[in-house]
Image (cartoon, rainbow, N blue to C red):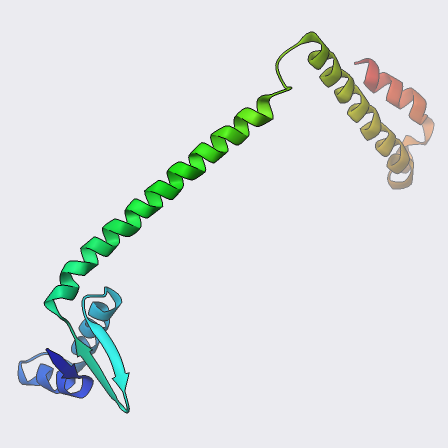
Length: 140
């Protein structure tokens, strides 16, 4: 069934329906892909074919199936990537020692940064030398 927009808006008040309600319902049907809409010249036509109504659930199903398959592929890729990243990171004494040394170096760098900025930003530290301050923190 094909209908002009103007015809639909005229049919509503004859049946006791407000014109704005007709517009809202038709727009809702178009948004839900239950009714198709096309502008031809200056006229806007609305239509719905029985075969289109059966196609919508099939299309939704196909899209969801496709999404599931792509999600499964992505999960497999991420699991493979995770396993690849774990190689070389097995727990060992050498690794623990290297991580410990890394933490010490990072802490030392942070303290050096503090040593550089503290005298500039906080004059109350004038009585404490940075070497004494850093050695106190590192020993703890």
